[in-house]
Picture 1 (cartoon, one colour):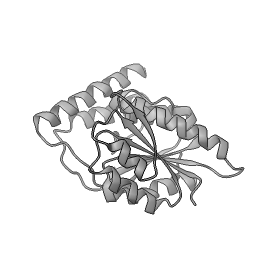
Picture 2 (cartoon, rainbow, N blue to C red):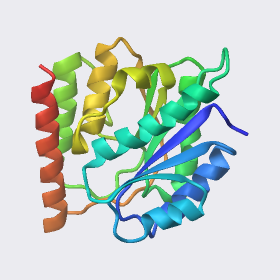
Picture 3 (cartoon, rainbow, N blue to C red):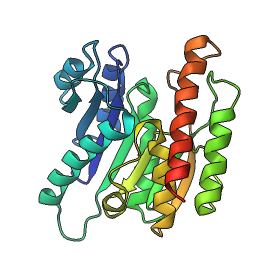
Length: 231
């Protein structure tokens, strides 16, 4: 039983992938408790997650990734405090619900934090899948460098391991898609060690379609808000 690892999965309408993601996590982290932050899904994501044994923190309407994951992380952290044992460092692993089978690679992030090599470990995707022109990611890198001096490869990766002590510093997360950019800036400013680890992960990527560009436009707007609020 892995009682020292707690998993928080962000999901919005991931009915076709959440089952595979949770199955892969169960194999990679046997016995670890899983919370799913369901940001108002309308496709049965929450039901599939519950059937897989996850605890679901569900929003009845979409409130944004940062807020939804903050709610689930608070629930997980509250329970972790009660179960905490002396001398054992608890590690929270955050990921997106669309990783599918590749979620099994996330053990490397947990090990980096549990081993004392980092307070926050971020997964950098070894393979780029889909994507747009790179403007939103470029801005996210620039914003992090300007606000805390850290050079990043994967500034908006949602695949992260965080020590329990660091998580206390980082909650609540920045609203919407600004969650990861804000998390990185806040962690560095709090004196936490942030590292990136390249992993062979796969996810549902948005392509160069109208919907894809609109999605990245919303991301960019949230990144700008995070940057302005962290002067």
